[in-house]
Length: 478
Image (cartoon, rainbow, N blue to C red; front, side):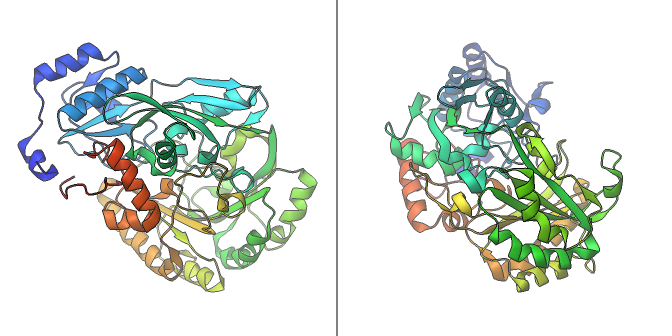
């Protein structure tokens, strides 16, 4: 039966089936009519609700195994949620959602400089545990993001990425539940093809319940942000575009054109302000960092300067991303260059003379170790990509189509420099939703290899509520 026909037929399970699942799972098993259902399914993006037939709040890998077995037996697609920052919408028909928020364990091994992290842990959990041992994991820009999903999507650190590569490059082993409901461990030596595919292929091959990865010896860094008046963005970014590629690998930078709300939580200079936020981090000492920053400081006078010596726990101060859930639409894609022509197009599309209402339009400079294959290769598709851009607009749900129009306008303006490669975690829920787009993202050779792994481990495409990699020779309906 095709997905369309199955959806029309309604759920393939009975109340007795659900009772049986509840009897085997320790965590909650919830249906849409249950009081706790909405909270269990809630995502970070309030405009992208997920409404599965069932949601299972896993308390162990065994709970996950029971849920996956139930889903496969009853023809349900499986989706997974922890922090819910990148959820492809899960439709109401024939879907089972597994939440991992109860699996929050973090263990640090000081001798081997590694962390073992459960599926529901977030970066602030891992950062706190690692800091006690003088270690720093390759965390992302937002400490409230889940560790596992971030890592399976590559994991781009604004502090350690250019010096140490993607978070996925440092994974030692992965515990997961595959589509047959079996708890397995994949390593570079045991099931190496599955291990390769999981790191970059995100949720396509199973439900990851635990990972181990190496950390870096580091206690502090020099970094933060310089906010300039938005009206000066052309002059500042004309310096940034030649300054950023010349930085050493110990330094990282990005910028964001921001139209911020009137929010008392923001520093006074940023309330209801149009600003250019240039982010910077450096792994050396303050004097070296300031020498590197000198050309940028000479480009304009910031309205706010937060660059300082900081503990690793303060990694969130580099980007100052929103923490609380909100309704938004987004887009993200790779850029093969950021030239004078690219800058001119950016300024015209989102600069002071535009009608752009988007809250943030950012560009991140990549390069350095992010370009190099790790000792144990993985499926991360963005190596060699010099820049990525990401934009989002916030509004009440009824006004989000207006924001979508401006996202499309921005994407069109920068399309001459767009690259098919992207960091998987920066793909919007409604992007790369067909096989052609996913194949373009990974490239034909990598996609063919991923599809072969999918055929072996998930031949019926149980894990398809994602940016889906279909199993080789899968029927069109899957």
